[in-house]
Length: 247
Figure 1 (cartoon, rainbow, N blue to C red):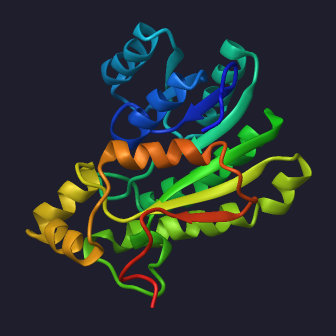
Figure 2 (cartoon, one colour):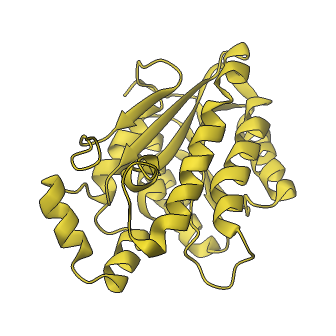
Figure 3 (cartoon, rainbow, N blue to C red):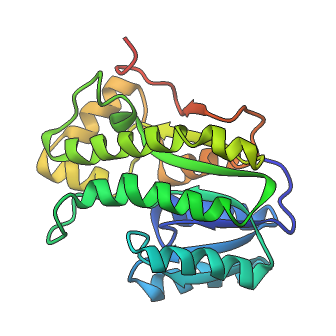
């Protein structure tokens, strides 16, 4: 991973899990990092403290990216605090939560991702990059079935990926690249744990099929690398390969 000294990176959904580890890895490489959370301020502030204690630079910004005003405020906070925005890591996702509005998965995983990418592109520096984080279960959902409970999420994340890839020409005009990074189930994530409760043994079965599953930190390392990886815009990185998905 290239030196990121002085660069500003916004990582959505970064108060825990893959997002939190990604943010800390990027901060250790010298980046100014914006930690985004929806409702858990203490958790986000804990990540900021961990970064600053090591000499890094970070702020926490509460914003629900499904709300346009929040999304704009999130981008503005990065620019106002650090003087600009260089990279955006679209890590936030969901859709299995209870009590949400109809079509919440599509609103979060497609519509909100596209809107935030467009808002960020208006402020991002030339040479910047947007990284979209997804899963093999979502990327390959049209070819390979997944668990019933995860299907709406998978379909919405694939729709989000497609919508973002359609933005590549417009982003290229601003000299901003887009990269997609996908992995199998990640050990220790909320989604994997929930699916395993719904389908006991699901993680173990997938681990056997894939050979191994990445941990949260291992996948975060790969996400962080893609921020500056020497790959063309529109590149899709299949972390760990895609055994069982590619026929």
